Image (cartoon, rainbow, N blue to C red; front, side, top):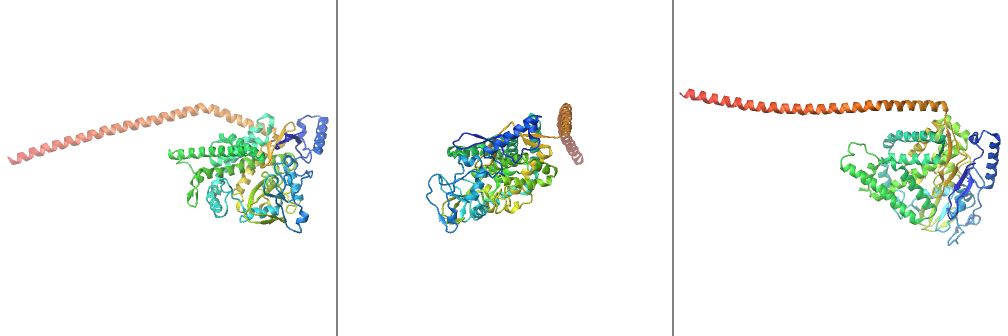
Length: 555
């Protein structure tokens, strides 16, 4: 049985089963060929599932969370809530909530769609309609941040101008040439997994490495920074989850130092002329971007790339891990998509809607507002919950079930909406699609590793830190691929000395040409010297003869 550990604040990690509607066919076969062991594993799974609140997205077993707002009274008359006592409100990082975030948010959506927050001022909205209202009305709900955050922490005209300036770095013309690089990164990682530990691998490691490496490819930075970006992202999530403000400040400084070093390195290369013959990349475009006629500061660029990192190494990585888990626990869907990859884009949109990778974002009221029959004064923080909005039954029929053909373009909140909608929506979808195209094409089955231990990532993310899986491929096809790779490796080994000799010969020829050129130049110089001397001699003879001729004529 796979166990799951969820990190919670002020609590020890607790084990719970990774839930799924039914035990996938063939998943337990790796434990033993014995039917008795298979039955035992199934019984254990059922007992554990009944005793715990599992992370199954279709589970209706939710915790009982207290709602601080009486919505029955509020439905007839607007209610103003101020001065809530401690423990009267909703706490996103409460240990009970973190134990199963999706289930907790589902319950809040039904019982308390507008909740007063606990331990900090502000409110959280859970319904699709209320979330849509908040994120689309930038005049009443400000995104302005006390910290440098481009473009997310800007409002109004400044925000619009910043987005327009940045958009030039992410055009289709500039992004499309990167897709083959993304595909190669995904392909190499899948090959590594297939060659490691008999396919018993960490699916989330694949997700993190792919997300980090495509980000580095996008920025044209050293791929060896992948583990640095991953470690920073995990620590940043931990600090926010535990409300560790000193750690968050240290993380911000560490991120700025990383970006500053890369920007300065690029400037040095440009100054030395080492970058002049290379095509411009995203880093160049950000250095050259102008907002209201001015270049962005390094701090602004660092904040922009930090937002990019949270979109890729956090959200995209969680989307990949969540989708791998969903396919592993729904083998029929997995086979259906593998056999018809044209279904993949719709399947990924639906899986990301169901599971959700990013929990929330925040706005601040600029004036008194009313949301869900609850009046909220100016200056209050309003948190929108993306996960519950995407599982709202008033918008999505049977929201806890997977269905093809939903209207994701207009209703799915995975990538935001309104003026602050993520600029790279289509790019993010393509990046996600490429990862799963390579994963599904190179495998015949993806299942959970029942000997492994899952570890969850919680607020501000929603996904896995570790996801033990078992991947399989066609043995005959795999052997053929391995044989071809061995042949290529042998050929490369045989060709290496020849190529070295060719390089040496080329260098000798080049040196000979240079020597010949120098000799030719020397001969030409000597010839020119003699020619000049001849001209001088002939000129002297002509002068003497002319002089003698004149003297003879005088006589």
